Length: 455
Ligand SMILES: Cc1cc2nc3c(=O)[nH]c(=O)nc-3n(C[C@H](O)[C@H](O)[C@H](O)COP(=O)(O)OP(=O)(O)OC[C@H]3O[C@@H](n4cnc5c(N)ncnc54)[C@H](O)[C@@H]3O)c2cc1C
Image (cartoon, rainbow, N blue to C red; front, side):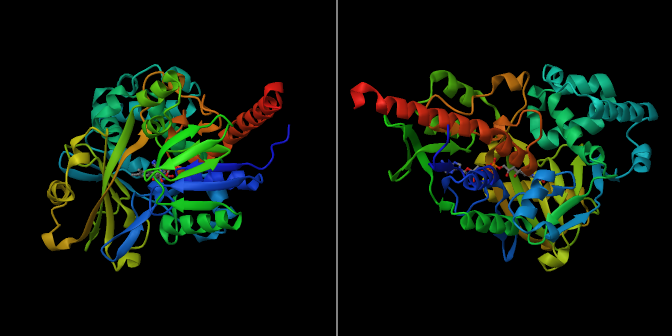
């Protein structure tokens, strides 16, 4: 059955919402994006800290991000990508170590040769393993301790897990580390010798600008500052989206890309089972400080931290993007991943600044008070769903029991890590099913409207 042109609402204008709008428009559909923020982009959006501007959260592109590179080509920005080889540091027992190549790894003092061999074997084994479903049944900490040993777990794996999962690593399955290692090795699998990190000149602000222009050229409308507060279906099979001021818009279909707890709150008419599935997803959020410093901290893009610290890693963006872009300042991000119930989400910016700055100065002795040229904190309480034990069996359906309403978000990334490339792949993978459900509903509406009692 042919699908005639319909008017779609895409609620949530992050990368996922933008890509769904892009693909729907390319299929001849009419699309309106409803986004709560002041601009499109969600987690990839940019901001200013003082007079300097960059992404709110640190973002890099991998050589193996083929879907993202395809999008950059589509919007005319692939040639604007700059590629850089980066170094990684480890801050352990009060000292900063480089761990950027095999030789440095072999010299890394906190581990014995046996520890290192076991660690190397774990990475090799995970890069070759294919049965991620089996790994969903094992806690990541148990799996890594068994393969690498207690010491390598404490000195290497634990800081890496904490850097991305906070204390929630305890509930996470081994599928998480499998997906992370698979992403690290993706470049090699696609025939590239090594992985490099890239960025587009101008950062994500430039990508979002190009993407938004591309959408406008295809007739996609974007309503920013529209915070949806209710989504319902009426008896004609239409979807009504209401904002927090009570303004209502009517659509034929709606796709919500907002986090699951928000989607469950907006769609009051979901079945109890669907609503429960959304509410039960355990999310991890992030509070992430952006600092502009008058001097560089280290040559490392990422520094993993083994010692106790209020932040879970140090990301020095200006080891990828030249500092000349920021008047010679170093741009450093200090993320702390935590559940939305963590006190960090209730702390004031000043409290976070005091704690983070004190710890950073203790780690890097050369920092003085006057080196801090800018400080700002971004918070996102719902960033990604924790890959808990048996996660893929707990997913809510994409097309819901509410006619015309679909909920698709990062919870539906099952055997991958959260990143823009996976997000774009998710849109392309799920859209055919969404269109099919929409077609079926159009057919049902015609059948209802043509039934004798409606004539
Ligand atoms: C600290 C950090 C570092 C990262 N680093 C990288 C990296 O290096 N490389 C990489 O590829 N990826 C990275 N990512 C991941 C990347 O940012 C995400 O994969 C991607 O942005 C997810 O897009 P999304 O559209 O699914 O979600 P979001 O960006 O969260 O979009 C959801 C949108 O819904 C909107 N919304 C919420 N509620 C409502 C409502 N009621 N009404 C209307 N709109 C609403 C929000 O404002 C938001 O715009 C990073 C993420 C973080 C947090």
